[in-house]
Image 1: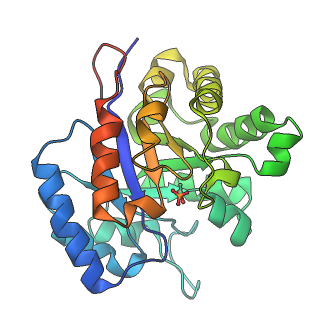
Image 2 (image 1 turned 180 degrees about the vertical axis):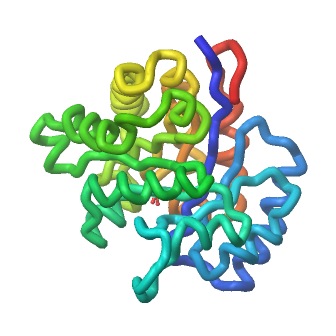
Length: 264
Ligand code: PEP
């Protein structure tokens, strides 16, 4: 079994202002200098992306965008391309976040188009998957996340999956609600996702893919989640806006026991 370095990423969504962003970046730089065993990342609003890249330069903290447009360039007023994200020095992008799927109407095909252009442009990707409460109640969680994963991953080279893809399991009912999946619920879905990844890209790639959990992660629930063998860190929304919570999550999340071996 290969170990995976936990990846603790903050999705700032449409929050913070310039002053708060700078202050958070200073604290994050300090946190990174303590060399927490987790890989750290932040996903600021577009307008602050270049600032954050500059503020966190040399810290080792991943900086990415919360989405990108599916087309290379053109008459798409208000949109931001993968090339622009790369141009300002960001390295990652989130695709398929449930707020994009449910509030902006992005379909599985839209998510795949964004993922394809991101990878083609040189950005690494966090692909979010997750079921709604109705889907969970109807017993279709496995079908929903398997479909979202397959649409996102099928046909990609195994090496790309292994090196450039992170999957975030984010049950929609847990995002921003204060409800979180129990460790057992998270582990069940994470193990399923890893098995599906093995079918789609081979076992070696599946063992290397970081599968984050997301949904009301906080300092008091991260350790139990992270102790699950297939949970490799977290995509954190609300709690990433407060430096102390994010730092506690980064320290606790990475201190849980991990499978032995190497990582990426
Ligand atoms: C998210 O938006 O990705 C998320 C997990 O949000 P929160 O932690 O606030 O539930």
